[in-house]
Length: 438
Image 1 (spheres, rainbow, N blue to C red):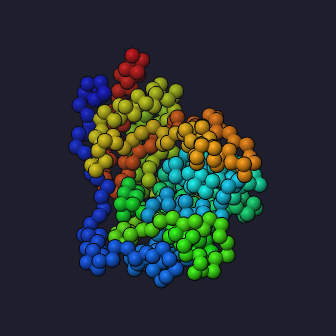
Image 2 (cartoon, helix red, strand yellow):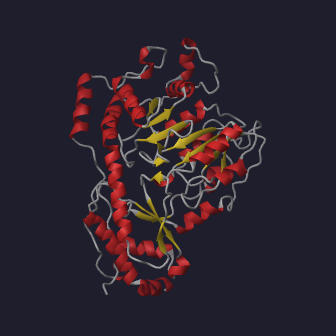
Image 3 (cartoon, rainbow, N blue to C red):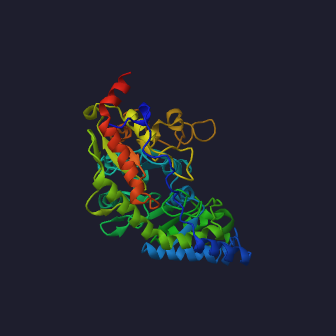
């Protein structure tokens, strides 16, 4: 039996895994064309034809909207900005509640706080790690103005049921699709199932332009309001016929021409890169060695997952070994990934700590020293952000293992090394248990 690296043996692999880097000659050529044009941005923060940006931004918006079968695309400088703009476009404000997931990147939640609304955390469905429709129903009040649905890890949420709930209560649904480009729900692309869908072009997403984002919608009014919030709304409404000044305080969420140009090229690669993720994960799952307590998290039969990350369920009691020790042993066998040095191997326990346990929510303070929006006099609800609020979320965070060993940059030989690390751990379970016992 080969000794684990954690216990003094040699690791399975020391060579860095290849970088997720699909910026190529087409992107370089596009950047040089834009540089040669001298137009790096064409946005004007006044009512003018250039209020909507330059040719690359507009072209990117058209192409993205077309690829998602949406009427409108509104480019922004980050997915965070897109979420903020979407919440603003929905008319959310002081005294309102926005139902959010506690298991997500924090911007999915602070988008509500940005408009002085109060986040209300619904629990997740343990099968897909997205918002549970039953938990949403239990959290709705007369103050609920919007729901932000996160398609976590690339698995679509149960959107039919969520939209039925939203229609019954006249609630706007915003899809956070940062981790789910090219994912589908019952044959329909995510982002177009709710009222607005927000995508990310951040550097570690499926496709990217370094930073950036885009919002899609089929609603003309929402698209107009998204554009206004993106680009100094308060200075523009004088020249426009705007039916409501609610949230018409604008920001500078504008995307540059270079990022938009790169985004256009990346968009053309997106489906192929996601298909490679799916093939790689299928190979990983088919060849994963048997290990007590470890199982592959299922995918609903009516969706296409886009695999920003993959999930393994882990029962430490069945395995007789804590999750932390298991991951520590795997880390000893595997190197980091090129261009992501300092982050460790691409496998970890849980995802993020439930957001309601962050200091902002524990101390009920965001704006100024008066506790707004949580203690705002306009807010008439009762808040509970204590541990135990969302038990399925807390259980998932304590038990699941996430990994990224389906990146399209990986060859089967790379994945074989990861599988070998799991096999080596399985062969050394008794030694690991003795190590854990001290």
